[in-house]
Length: 426
Image (tube, rainbow, N blue to C red; front, side, top):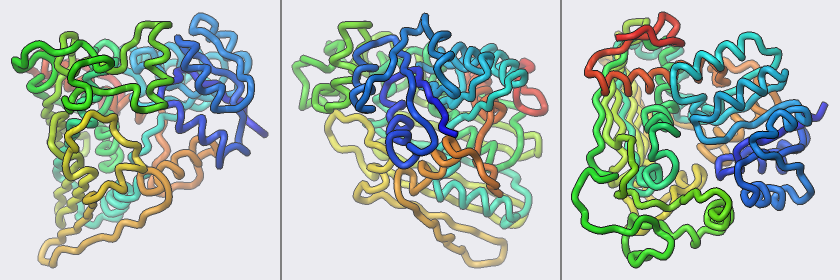
């Protein structure tokens, strides 16, 4: 039976799911409705679909729910809960972009709605499906290094990718929860999944050291469009140079006033760019995590120490940052950047290091995006790695970030319940 899909939130994140239903997954369902605060953005996607699609304003979301069997939620993070809960209460399935939400209160509301719902709630953690990350899960699950005692996870966002969070709506903590929620939810979910354990204690320190008004920089234009430094200042984005961004945002400004190209060093930045987190897990494993949003290269390093050895995953997604303003390339594009590389190494006690092969597939994230879309639109199969993520996974990853933000603000550790789905206080 073909599923009727409605979309709420028609920014650039929606395109992967829209294109999937127009392409290789068109046999699984059809797009029946769009909902957004901005008609220009909805018009862009109606044109992409190639036929009339009913469009709804947010205040008519209830009417949209009457037309669909499932809803894909790609709105601003802080609004996820209202759309997710309403769709679940209407008996629909829900597919929601990460992060599931931004705070403990809305996590609780989504949990209550999911527990009484008849539909399923899927959180799209595509990083689980990346072959290198799946290979780590397989090694740890097979006991290659015995019991995991500690992990270190370092993530570097460069001044293409990292800077972009500071020129759009993410720069306001009220919208995104900060990078420890919006971005790190991916990373915390990976560690939770890799370890197969719930986080129970979080301590963190965070700072704004580079973006916003952290450093004196002199007068700067408030936005990129029309700025005198356009084309020469590597932090000024020319939004008119990318046809998709131009149509989704620049051409849509007259409706809602949203500026996609704000100055990354301007006022109004309430999120941090330099973060360090300690997490203790219920299985006694310890995590040290860091996120830097102003690095000269892009990539990450994940290390696991165990009672019988060590696993090291090293990934370079972009070895250097070109001196030009640009939006971060797609996942598929990044994997073909000159100089990009990845290496997975197994170190067993009293054995020479062993490089573990990583099998790649076609498409974004080494074929991982296709596997995710299969699970989303065709339904999860029997996956021994347990990659499909539900609402509890989404809640755990959000709450590690929420707890980290609270810890950084208070200087005290924050505890979670035994299953990692609620905060219990310092």
